[in-house]
Amino acid sequence: MPRLERPMPSLFSALRDPLAQAPAQRRSRRHRQEDPQSVAQDYLQYMLNDYEQRRSHGRRRWRDLCPAYAFALTTHAADWPRGGDEETEGELAAHWEQMRGESRLRWPQARNVVEDAWLALDHMPISAVRPLLQ
Image (cartoon, rainbow, N blue to C red; front, top):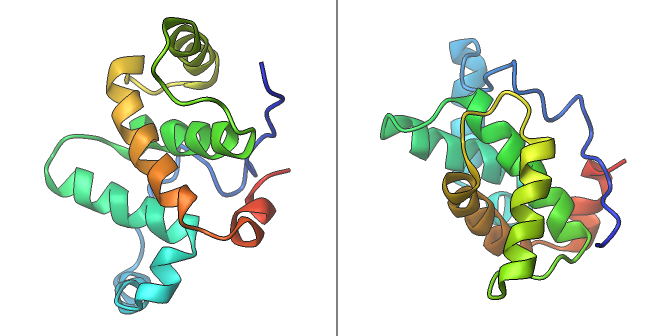
């Protein structure tokens, strides 16, 4: 099993919903969202965009999704194998159970979020992602 680095606790707090901020802060974030370069190279912006989209469909709360974003970041940085064989899926599911905290997502639900995040991380420069890990 590859060694996992922990994501920065200050950035991955499942208790603080990032979309529950003052209106002025939301406006400035939305303005940033329009810049394709910042979205493509910024995992934090990716998380906010993805969360906002999933939340708008009424599907998930931040407390459920934040651990999945952190899990995706750590497993991607550790270069874990992706799907396919049963053993890898079992290891990912077991690790998710240890890392999910208060998230209500079971592995089959979290896997969709994690897989989308892995795809986004594939297109981000490592130098933009590395500072998010301890």
